Length: 223
Image 1: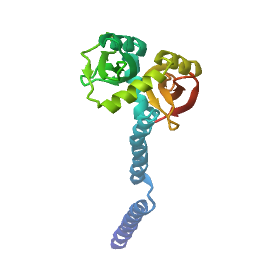
Image 2: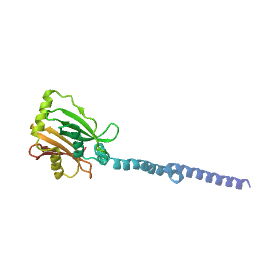
Image 3: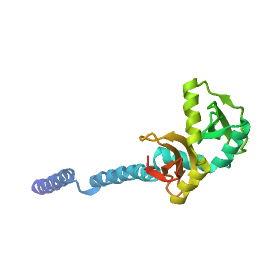
Image 4: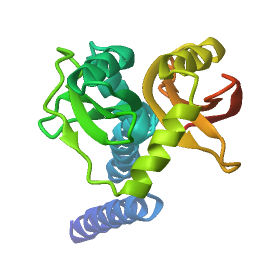
């Protein structure tokens, strides 16, 4: 009887030892239930990075300037030439010097224009880009030399800003957002015309000869 009890006890001990070894084997080879948690971590990491990648693709397609143009240009219900007409009408006997579409201090779109009389006396006139209403002209404090230079430049500019803009848009169809009387590196009077294309919201600047109405330079700003 005693021998039989000892045999049973030995069998139980072997079985117990086998169970412990099996448990140790699970811990070493990563199998069984313990292996379920490691694979769960990579999917979580992968899903966490997905929104960042997708967000970058959607917002990174355009530059800050392009997004700004996309937001501003459609808000302007008044065109550049309507703004110039309102500005020159606010200052008797004046001619257009420049016009540019900008975001006003109150967040509304406006055309910031500069007009000048034959003597070269310049004034800034802000025109509401929605209503087309011109604000109160603000005279610029230029000295006599600056006034004479501007008067001479206006006299040499036989091409109107509207003609220069038409020349630019004939080359590239789009919305005119700025026109400015200037001089290039060769000291030649030009109209600098900005044209924004709505398919990509890029801005192309054309230098149009202010006397011969020829395009002297074309530059695409993709920033």
